[in-house]
Image (tube, rainbow, N blue to C red):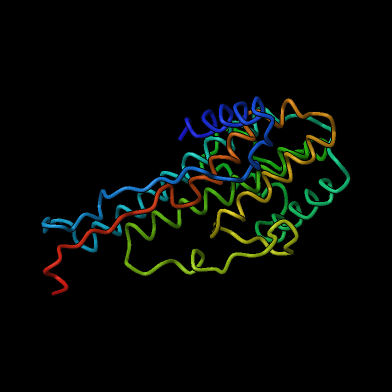
Length: 236
C-alpha cells in the first residue's frame, strides 16, 4: 500500500527523463489480486462464508487505511487560502452536515461518540481544507461501521452500501453517508488538490495528499480483487 505512490513517483521521473508526459494522477498501472479466501480447489474449508469474510475484511482494511490518512491530513492542512470555487464546496458540505446531524454542538457530540482523536466541532470557516476533510472522515467512519455490521450480523448488504454512486457528491444537497465508489472518495481529494495548486501551494499538494489520491485510484474501496478457484469436478 505505501509502496504504490513511491513507485509511481519513480515512474514519472523516468518518463520525464525520457521527455515523455507524466501519468495522470488518477491513473493506475498496477493491479493487485489475491487468492486467499477464494481458493476452493481441493480445500473444503474455503466455503462461501469464508470468501465473503475475506472480501469484507479487505474492504475494512482499505477504509481503515484511508481513514488514518485523512485524519493525518486534517492535522497538517491548516492553510487558510482556498479558491472561491472551493469555498462554495465547503459551504455546501457544512449545510449537508447540519441537515444530517444538527447544529455545531450536535456535530461535536456525534464526533466525540465516534472516538475521533481531534477536530470534533466543525472547523472555522478560515480552515476550508479541514472542513472538507471532516466530512470525508465522517463518511469513511460510516463506511467502516457498515462493513463491520455486514460482516458480523448477516449475509445481506446494508442498504446504505447498496446506494447507487452519485455523479458528484460535492454538489449534493443531502449527506450521503458511506462511500459506495472510489470516485466519490476521489472527488473531494481532487478538489482540495486543485484548490491548493491554484493558490500556489503546489509543493503541499504534491505531498501526502497526492499519495493518498494515487492509493485510492489503485486500491479503490476493495483493496484487492479476489481470484475464485474452483475444483473442476464441481462443474463436470
